[in-house]
Length: 412
Image 1 (cartoon, rainbow, N blue to C red):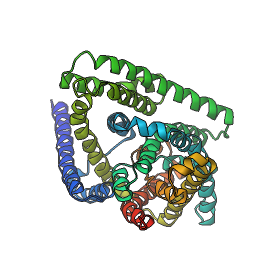
Image 2: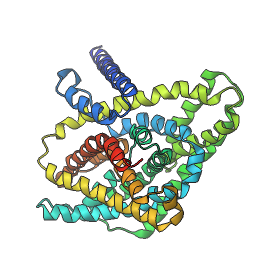
Image 3: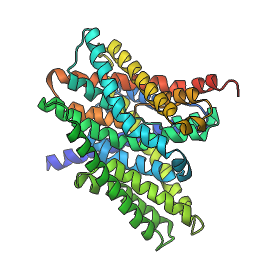
């Protein structure tokens, strides 16, 4: 009888801890609603670090399974179905280029830069380790930054590109990461053929699963205009699509995004049929900030142990390299296609803002935790190095979006 009671006590403690984190998160989001340019992610992470010094929270630890199976599906699905399809169609070429080919190029450029920078600073990394670190840092997570960017610049197009890119590049980054992790663990070299075939297979399975599920979802929601019914169906689709795609070897991230965007298409045709979007927003507009609040607090809580990491100098260099590589990739993409360049008026200014808005967040932390579980020995130092770079991104980019936008748009 002792063991069941002990297990029940642990579950109860975790429940209480998460409820308290939700309460803290809601307070922060309340302030955010009153202050237009409040950097929510970094505030939550800093508060999470503060919680780590309270013994009550010492037993609470996050894992990649929790992020992938609990947080990501809900966050991605909400972003996907609420993303304006018109904007996605208008900027599809640029979004697709940045989140697929551009991301792959960025991984190799950043990996190369990290490899030589680490050698120069006397903390050498293996080639596979440098590429793996790059794979952790290339996915972006706009969170509340897109709202700040839109309000401060007056450009919905810029924030749309940042948000659209982040939804798709999460799926791309996982494929890149798994290939580089395999290289690190097995010592095998890089194969273009293996990379291309695996990337296509995982992507096709993920998108195919998501589109099929999204189509079925669009048929099912027509049967009943009951609010609770519609919410339950989308909840099953958001998480079920993720799990099904992962089970068949596809990308759960891409499946969730595809099903959400298919639902967005359906909403565009049925908005007058019972207020479908209003029904869903009433639920998902509560779920998403709740998930984000707990997640970023948890990131700070679990990452506090890395604050004493002695390699912050190298982490700062890695962070700056990630910004430089992203700026080069975005600028090259923008100027290579005249139609993309003309859409933004001042392409150089747009490139800089899109670069700075590409914060490292949820997916980077998930991949970092994956690395923590999968590597050991000298390679384990990739984890604190990655966390330090992610923390710098959250701190500097979140707080810098508004002043940078105002500075670049001071003539308007």
